[in-house]
Length: 337
Image (cartoon, rainbow, N blue to C red):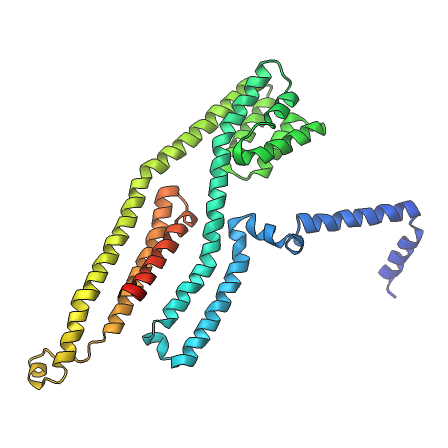
């Protein structure tokens, strides 16, 4: 037994019953914190941990997508060998399905999160304005927050009620406001909370501070809304250009390429025509269709990302367009061609 083990054993022996009980309680609190907020949270709340942030779902969807790709890749090799990867469209289907498995959950959660953020941003000016009006009418800040927490402010409501609970536990108003900013990691909320906290600590009139925060957040929401509305026309242009691109490729495949293939079949055995340079017996229609389908799917996927950046200023916001246009291109070349 080493010296550290002997010292630890001696320390455990000299603990009183009260200290031992306190140590057990502290250990349980630490373990509960690990399961609630730390690295072990995914064990106790796996679904909540994976869905609380859109990017977290990738920890589940990416491994699932890799498994599906490996299975499909193995099936493609067993079916036609290594050479079939360059000639068969089956591997294209596997890649598209893999992308759908990885991206669709991320798109759904990102849409939900963007709606929640927009709901909070729209409700925040009203919350500050109502709080300032109630305090100006003679109510204390504690009473104003409690009364406001009974109203409905969309996705901001549960956070306001949590703030009311903190104040009821004798938290100072400034500390409760800072905790609100820590709970909601949104730039507008953090900026407004920082404005209120700094102005209040500097000795400013809290009513005027709340009204200034309400005005600032309202202008922020208005500018974002105007920007989205003004940029929406460019999103439409991107989507329309993809439709035109896909339509032109369909016309080329259905008229020009199929005509060339039929002509190649007709003139394959005509020696005179081949001598004149018109022999098209080696024309591979399936190869050209596959190349065109790749072009359509690449165009749809990356055009969606561009539309998201132009419309909402985020690449992840364009994934919903990318998934839809990728599916449209894939189905079109698998069904219509």
